[in-house]
Length: 316
Length: 279
Image (tube, rainbow over all chains, first blue to last red; front, side, top):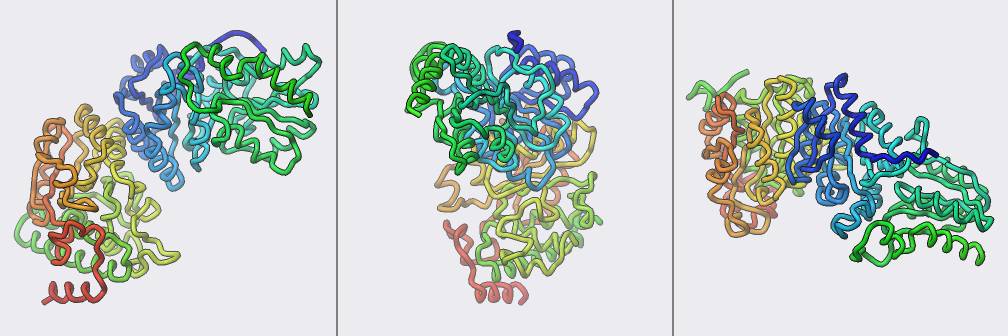
């Protein structure tokens, strides 16, 4: 694993910018939310970029209209507002419509989980995996590093359909150094002993750090990064975790509400695997502090994860 | 095929067609009581003028023809009166009119884009203008001259998303977009003015940088001339036609009833109304 940090949206938008010259069907919309990469797109392709204003409902509807006329559309906004302010627009004009008509719409949400830590609970995004996974006809993609995020530019332009890309807002380390196949849905970063940590997005970095701590105690967990939650390759996943007696899910999202934990519980039902879920419980996070602080408070920092796993294994 | 634009005789043709559409719509309702008849009767003249008045380019046997004008029926529940027109023009088999809402049929109580002639999914209010604005933007960017028409109700304008789209279309000068408001004065539970008064509508639209005009929505000449003027306008603004209509038009029991939205007409009532129209 290279430790070089990068910001998912920057790498993604830079590569999208690179595609726009040759592909005149790419159209970018944002809901008054920017980045340097978007500035370059606005400068070089003013005819295919529009800031619709602070209006996420309209963002989705304009995107749907453009897509029905053949454009490959990217709707870029802060993740909780993109998915939850405009949920019914997404349901009607993308999920429903997408079942009847060919569309290429890519919802690019920035600020997964606690990425916007100090902005508080309106900006935290802890429900999106569950609610977006609920909708048929929408791919839910949750990359854990900027390399995967960058590869999504070409993938989304080359593949029709409606996709939700859940990007972290903060710089993250690189995990992958080769092509990531979206169809695979997940990747086993490391084979372990009895226990496997299954994570998505930023929590894959937490899982990796927790695994390093556990190794000092002689526990060597497997590491599984889930980057596409819907549609999901359940059969391959069940096969991949065979041999692990305990599976721990880790996500920056609410537990028991349709996210990664629900996906894994459903996939492994009846297999006999012991499953633990780690994420947010007990409601919204009103406490103030940065992501590391809030994770420590909620037991999601590497030390707490390692301790909870150790304890569980002792009891097993 | 252009009817009705030249005057007298042509408008007589459109009036006769509108009567026929109203009768056929009532017949559909007689066998499909789940359909929203009052909402579908207020926009009969609007659909008739669009399709038989030469104002909406279309190819019944090639519904996805790139050169077509786009019509989004945002008030999807009121689209039952479009079924007889589309069947008559050959978009689908006329026999489907006798199977509306029946198991395995093509046509439901609210149309979806699986039905030839319908562009979008409809039924949930407040979506059509934004999607239509996106289409209009796409057509302009591609240098195409097709128009986009969006039909909404007046109660539907309560939805905030409509006004987001209104601001967007005005700001971006989408002059290839025409909004037709079937202002039939009633929501589901009461007259619109008593639920959430949207007046003065024309002034509101003009303030949002639209070119708005008000017509009698049951007068085919007025509807036709307003639509034609909107299509040929040199203005850089999007155009809106406020069609003043009556919910349940043609069915005396529904006209003036604030709850007409949820009222049905029994088959015997339908027969009586049709007999009256033909007398």
